[in-house]
Length: 449
Ligand code: NDP
Image (cartoon, rainbow, N blue to C red):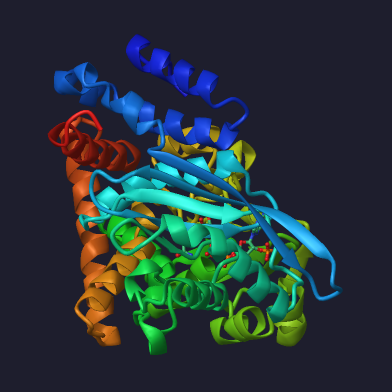
């Protein structure tokens, strides 16, 4: 990573000092600051108005106790978070993550990224994120329900369709959103559909929301490949993870003529030269809540499960990291480049370490950062809010066309902004600069807020 200009360096040092120990948040801020030198040179008003310093400070941070009773009658205590980061463009919008690794630094990194991602969609949504250190894995439906009810019993007072609209993320899918919405409705006595997104399609949800992040990431990578006269057709692809983003990324790659030869979970990866059977994967992961070992067992001899291995050691043309933060490290990036990988798009949030990103840049690998490449999920959440506000529901094809159009628009915006700042093809600078300028201009217009 290159040195920051003195002004940006002093802002970064302030962030380090004011947010001790929050390493993921530091990394997310640093990655944006790295792109902002030329932007600040062009817009002196941002420096005078201390826009960056304000953007790095959340508007509001809520931390709360979540007590609940497990199936054995034992009282469990978890910690809940909601960071309402920036509402210059619209109500705070961003998912909830339930995972044992969740602490304030993770929520802040995700919330910070979300501000810029949401701006890139071109839709009127601000940035926020939340979650808990609760792990739904291995819990009964009754336990998950009681946890969600307790979580919402505190969260409800902070959210609302014009205030803050949470959604799912890691560990929070349709089941959890259902329990959360049910409790919100009960406490407030309002059928306020627009307060949460990711709802079931029968009760206010949008078609395509489940598929949107994975599909959107694949549309984005296809657009990147087209700038060099290629496409996904015939490409060998790796998709890490096997959750919501990964499953629908695999489905769309196959639809566009590529072959996903490997996917993973935290226990290891499965390689299958003929291509992952996505219908079976959905059955194992979404219905049975099983593991990649269960998928490999069901698939038989064609699928090889590598316990504890790193998926990036499998040769590929395109890599779509869709599991978790910092999952592609320097050595993984080198291996991908050595094997001839030509494009990487981040389905997950910040899955590539700064050193790995640098290696891709030096090798001329097309690189789509998460805040652009995985923005299809939140964009479709905003489409869900539109349908809720107009008491309407759109068809699958219409919604999918809107998603494809939005992803194309994000790609064009990032590419055009990279050109404007003389770094053609650099989607990291393109995404950060385009999004930052939009949020900063809104903040200037709104006064010192
Ligand atoms: P899920 O909980 O549905 O799936 C996460 C998947 O990643 C699981 O298969 C999990 O395996 C796997 N995983 C976690 N840690 C590792 C690891 N160290 N190595 C390999 N696999 C791992 O989450 P989502 O699919 O919703 O989210 C994935 C990423 O995408 C996150 O970064 C999220 O923030 C981001 N994202 C999600 C959006 C959405 O709409 N869902 C929108 C935008 C971004 P295991 O079961 O073993 O833990």
